[in-house]
Image 1 (cartoon, rainbow, N blue to C red):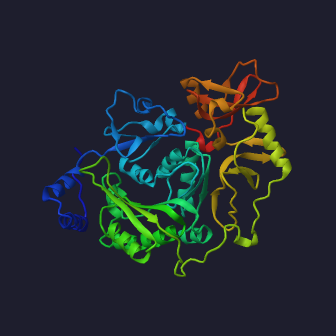
Image 2: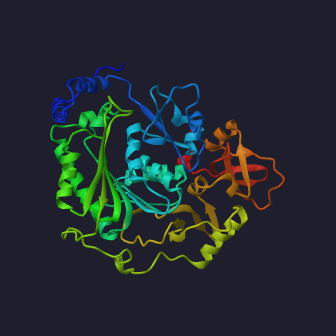
Image 3: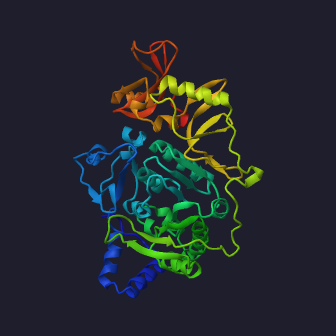
Length: 458
């Protein structure tokens, strides 16, 4: 048992009244309070881009630890005892994501399909983003956004570790995106910033920051985000709204207010998870469908996707010579002569977009799959490229033992006696258990480590 928590009285009285109004028995409120004195559920979700084995939980958790399947996420597993999963090679290889169990529900309800255009509007740090990417299987356009540059960098790192190849990462306010992408996406997820009542047991800082009027303040922000998100949904498309809080102010009341001013949306369902009834800390979700397009009432000035900054119809210039340098690398070191995607350049960095989008005028963290850098007529492959490949995609690959894999992730170079490599210092794809770790350059019997500084583990 955990040490009893001191919960805010306004939170307790509001939740008690909420349960009473919903005709939930008083003993349920007692059970709800008791849950806060128990060890929280922890969760892990297998990355469907890299692992498809039905028994993947054995690989991640191990058969000597009890686990519980998560009903709303077939690739998710919950456990109680703390496990050092984040310190494993499998975590560094992006084979799974550590995620609170109930937080896996919104992406499941979004039900993204391969080939669709998807927007995760409040995406950082990337749990729901990487879950959605797994269901898309690399097909379609995925835009992940977070207005905070700091949080967006964490989002980029998690996307790259997971091997996501079809994502563009932006750092914009919802209003600006709504101007750029009117009626553009098949599905939009709004995991809205909230008062975080469902995080009290896991994060003491959220509990300390809670105030009596915080739900009302959050609801005003949530309503703004939701209306801009709605403008970006195609007719017939799906909009999922979610929070990790319990009060009706940020949940049902926000949805009711939205529906009263958006008669082109219908409510498909709502779902609420409670910590004393379900696996996890709790969540609220509403699934909405856009029945038709309509005028926006003047709060969004619609613009064509290619209109910004006078660049109508233009895309980022890619010199033919640069494309040939990249193609030479693919022919020399990959089993495919070309990777799918539309190439764009930012400074010396080369990206592959799932479909061509002009992003001028937007704050961009990643223009697509960052495959590498072109400098001095040489192509240097990126860590993101490595994490998005499979061992069979590389002409020259090494599958390291566990001991040598740890040496590699610590930034060490390794002896490698291999006679079938060319003499021209080839790029070697470094793996462990067939899953990627990064790149090395074979130089005079050594694998010269090319793991970026930010990826090195001490």
